[in-house]
Length: 106
Image 1 (tube, helix red, strand yellow):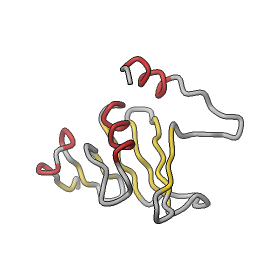
Image 2 (cartoon, one colour; image 1 turned 90 degrees about the vertical axis):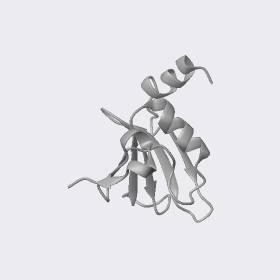
Image 3 (tube, one colour; image 1 turned 90 degrees about the horizontal axis):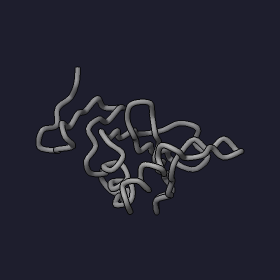
Image 4 (cartoon, one colour; image 1 turned 135 degrees about the vertical axis):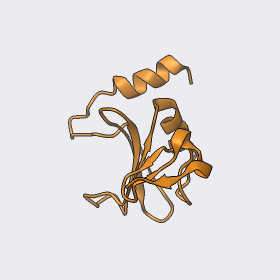
């Protein structure tokens, strides 16, 4: 996919009449649902326990669109997606998405 196409998919994503707020979503084998979202200053993968759930169990934030898109497409629901820099519920941080540099922000 060309960078221009990727940028257009994120920045110019039309909102559906039913209130669609995500760019892409997929359901894992265990029933959890993962959503790819454009936020104000970041891109995140949000995970809910099922399609009917109104909340999220986890948020993985990425520094750029390309990293988020690659991680979303590659992640099958086991473990954690690769390349995130901020895990919201635990306050874990990974500078440059590097797991070896992980720390907990206080």
